[in-house]
Image 1 (cartoon, helix red, strand yellow):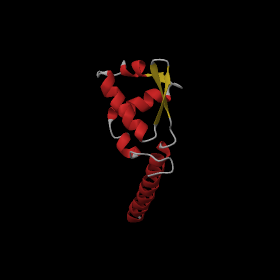
Image 2 (tube, one colour; image 1 turned 45 degrees about the horizontal axis):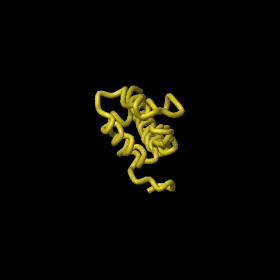
Image 3 (cartoon, rainbow, N blue to C red; image 1 turned 90 degrees about the vertical axis):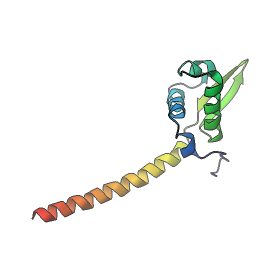
Image 4 (cartoon, rainbow, N blue to C red; image 1 turned 60 degrees about the vertical axis):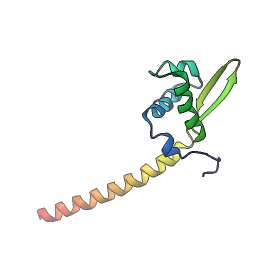
Length: 109
C-alpha cells in the first residue's frame, strides 16, 4: 500500500474501460454529480456507483455530499504510479530499439 492508505491497487482500478472513462470525465470538470456521470453510460446508477467506489478505494476519486446529491472529483495523484511504470518501460524499449538500430547500421557496413 502507498502512503495514502489505498485499499485497491491503482492498476487494478484503471483496468476496466468504464473506470478509465469515468477518470476521463472527471478530469474535464472540478466536480461532477452522480446523475451526470450515469447519463454518460448505458448502465444504471448502481453500476456506475460501484465503479466509482473502486476508483475511490484506489484514491483516484473523492466524493462529497451536497444536499441530496453526491459530487465526485478526480484525485490524479495516484496516477503518478502508472506514469512511473510506463516511463520505466518506455526508457527500456527506447534503449533496446537504439541498440537494435545500431546493430542494423553495423550490419549494413
